[in-house]
Image 1 (cartoon, rainbow, N blue to C red):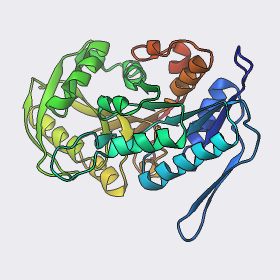
Image 2 (cartoon, rainbow, N blue to C red):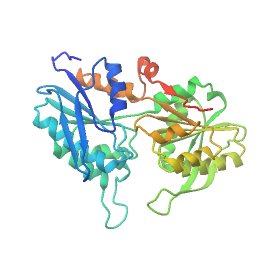
Image 3 (spheres, rainbow, N blue to C red):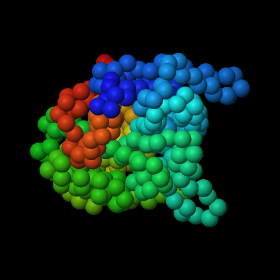
Image 4 (cartoon, helix red, strand yellow):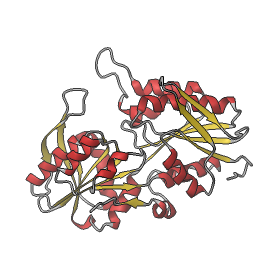
Amino acid sequence: MHSEQGNIIKIFAGSTGGAFAKKMCKYLGTDLGKSEVIHFSDGNIFVRIQETVRDHDVYLIQPIGLDPNNELVEILFWIDAFKRASASSITVIIPYFGYAKGDKKDEPRVSIRARVCADCIETAGADRVITMDLHSPQVQGFFRIPMDHLYSLPILCEVVKGMGLSENLVVISPDAGFAKTARKYADYLGTPVAIGDKTRVAHDEKAEILELIGNVEGKDCMIVDDFTISGGTLADIAKVLKQKGAKRILACLGHNMLREKGVKRIDESPIEMLISTDTVENPYLAASKKMVTVSVAPLFAEAVLRIHERVSVSTLFDQVPSKVVEDAHFSLAKKE
């Protein structure tokens, strides 16, 4: 695909970004770049570009998700390879930036992991980064290169609207920290908000829901969060909602990192449906009838198109084009 400047958009995928990259290419009407990744038996990674990228704008798709350490290192190798192959620019698309959780030094003698990742990506030679639903938005400030932070909220809300649930719906924030984003969901859908009182005593995946602020009796409830790893918070707050008289319960997430135990926990919970995006290709989700996957690849593709054509990306933050919504295919993945 050509821009007004004559450069060709070159889309490449890392070892865990292939499916997402192909959806982007379909939206853009272009072919996926030829490349290969070799994982040696000793753990080493080897990357190779199999076509010319000289003087072209390159876009690499790779989440930092289910295998974060290897995925991050692979990103660095790809950047170096594109740089040495004389690419005109290198944009790294990280649909899920897993290390965004490590955004601060909140106790003695710990690393600010997100800052280390940002420094590594910049030092390797990236010119721009595109990501979605950062756990901590301030991570954008760790980069000195341009960083576009997209949001899944508009697409997820359009999916919920299509389900006809908004009339009796209450948006549930799992804690006070996510209440601001939950309010944005509620404003988009025209619904009230309730907030969970959650406490976490250690740097692990266990948190305790103490109380619920707001009325949910007889209501359909939609728990919203940026991601889940264990499903514990979702399952716990769902139990509290049932105790408070909630009618139906669903959950809506930017990123779904559940593995076998987490999927089982959701299956055994009062949650009827868990809607999440495809920022991480997660094979564990197929085992559950409750999982709904919404593709945000078209949104990333639209961002790439606008960046390439030197058009503003900021309009995508609050409202996405109808074509993106239409192309954001989602699968109920229900098995009888």
